[in-house]
Length: 433
Ligand code: PLP
Image (cartoon, rainbow, N blue to C red; front, side):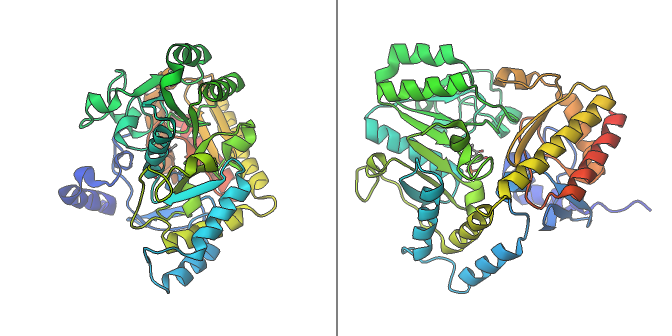
């Protein structure tokens, strides 16, 4: 008798009351097809679905779970905080501690304001940059995703790259008036000439340049040194605010974020994901001179009922404590590299054009022989091969991001045994491609 698939039953039920059956589009498996896995529990590098099948998790909640699922130290901290109520809407000492810790490991951040999602962080950082400069125009880059605020949904990566027609320089989402994106200039990632040209013509009108300093929403694309220096020099010269969106890379590629690896000091930084240890928590921060324009000190309004939520603060503080321990990033980065080398060797053995890249606990793999450096190159990768590989790996018990355009994430719980199991699964999968 065929087994009843509990995931299918849940998916059918979910679609009746939740649009598409999911609360964030990429979870619906639209690009890869098939039935999303409904998670019942997770521990360390694993989660279990509704059929009680175990998977090695390579998305880790899209980044936050860097210390592994259900980490006992984080659970203890959260339980302790929860016992004294979940929210006060008044300040707590924990918020100060979290702010102090962030400022200590990320020297460009002199002051920080906590919010509840990465979307709020980037949206608020842009408003602040506009309020500070008195200018309207912003520059973003193709394939970078900065959350779903209206003015940022232009040629955005992540789910937008999976679902929308992003070929037009127009809103990539329905419901966004052209008027709201007319102040957003979109330039190609890694294109120095393009940004020089725009600053030459309109430099004195540009409020901010926002970028993913390692782009993880069009698979994984690294910036060239020239690109980063050009952006920093041009924004400084023209009085525009440089915003590093480190919602994904912050505390994931290094304790001090991508900026610590690149030697760039942004004016504002957006954080999220890891900093909340899996709870709804994000932040934006940077130069005191700019941050002091925020309400209640300045005229730029920004607020939140659950901002600095004490339970989320407890999860974030404990996670930051764990990742600050000696050897954390050496271990995380080493395991991730080992995984990438194993995947590449497995693909080579099967004669499949394949390339890999990683930074800290974040990785990308591409069904192309060369690592892509632009949005255009990423969209030309072999999506059909990815889809087949995704399902073969799923059958083997390895859960990859269900889209060819998303980065993958490891955790400190991805030890040798887990990495070897993923490589063995990939060897079997490549043979069947
Ligand atoms: N910025 C970046 C770089 C992201 O990767 C994301 C989410 O994936 C966001 C912003 C938005 O964060 P959130 O989903 O918490 O709103």
